[in-house]
Length: 455
Image 1 (cartoon, one colour):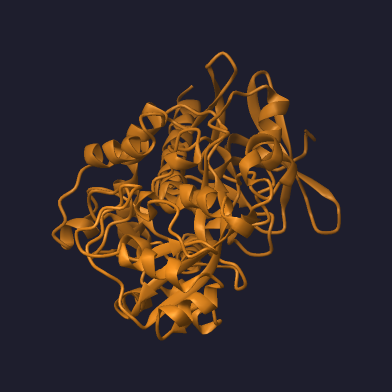
Image 2 (cartoon, helix red, strand yellow):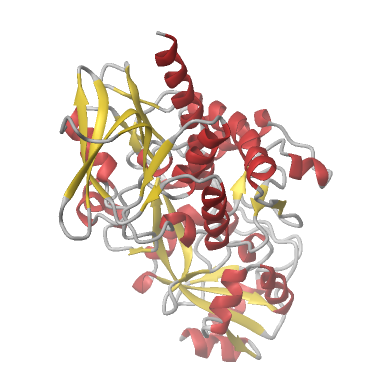
C-alpha cells in the first residue's frame, strides 16, 4: 500500500442497496465513508430485482394495522430453510431490518408501503416493503438521491481489485479506473458490500452445477470477487450452495413474471400441458423444476381476474407491453399455443377447481376460467446466497472462526440466511441481507471508529 495513499475512516466496496444503506447509516452517525462502485452509475442486482424488502415490526406495518414481530419473521426464515440458515444471522437480520427501514424513511426520506392482499410463499404476515415505484430500479434511485442529499462520496467506475492487509487487519484497497490506472485508498474499516458470483460461469459450474446452463438474470458485476478475496485470505466461506433462482423468467423478453400470479391461483404447465410441481412452494426452487422440463421451458397459465391482479406489478406491466402475455379464447387455442394435446391440457385444468388437492399437495381455491392467458418462461439464476462467513456483527471470519477486527462483509459478498440449497430461499432474503447487513456493518464500523478514538 503506497504510503501517500489518501486515508478515509470507512471504505465501502459496492454501491448497491447494501453499500448505500451502510453509507447512509454511517452518515446518520456523522461518520465519514467513501463508496466505490465499479459501474458508471450505482444499480447492481438491486435495480434488477422487484425491490421488495421483507421486514417485521416497522412503522409502515403498524400504520397499516399489521401485527408482526422479529421473532415471527425469524421463524418464517428458518422454516423455509428447514432449519439450515445460520441462526446468528437470522436473528440479527430479523431484528435489524425494521429499524433500518424506519431509519431510511425517517432520516433519509425513503417512502415505504407494505404490499397487502396476498402473501409470498413462506411468509405468515404481509411484510414486503416497497417504494412507490414498486421496482428495484425505483428503490435504487431513491437510495442514490438520499446518498446525494447526505453528501456521501460515491466514486463510480472504480473496480476494486486489491485488498491490503497488514498485521491481521485491513488497511486499504486498490481500484482500477477506466483508463487502466490503479489508485489506492487507506481506511480504518473496510466493508465488502459488493456482489455474489452468479455472473461467473466458472464458479457457477463449480458451486452450483444444477444451474450451470441456466439463464443468468442478475447483474454482470456479480463476478465472485468476494469469493476470490476470501480464498486468497484463507477466510471461511459458507452456504455456497445457496442461491435465489426464479421459475418464471419470460424467455424471450428477459423479464421476471411476478410469482404472485402462482400464489393467487395461476399454474405452470410444461410443453406436454401437465403441471409438474407445487407452485406455491416458492419461485426459487421452481427454477430447478422448470429447467428439468423438456427444453427447460414452462408456461405460466392464468385467467382474466389474475391478469387484472398482476397490473399492480410494474415488471408485469412491462412484460405485457413487450408481448410476453398471450391470450387464448379456450382450451383448444391454449393447447395450440403451447403445442400440446388439448385433452391432456383439459385434464390438467379440470384438476384446478375449488377444494381440489393435487398429487403434489397443492390445494386449489378456485378454477381458472376462459379466456386464458399464458407466458412462456424458463428457469433463471438471479442471485447467489453464499459467500464470506460472517458473525452477527458482519465481521469476516477466519478459518478458525475468529474475526478480522475491521474487515466486514454483507449483502451478496457474505453468506445469507437461505441455508445451503435453492429451496431455502424465502422471498426477499436477498434484499433482507443487503439492507439489514448494510445497517449492521455501519453500526459495527462506527463502534470500531469510536474504540480507536478512545485509545
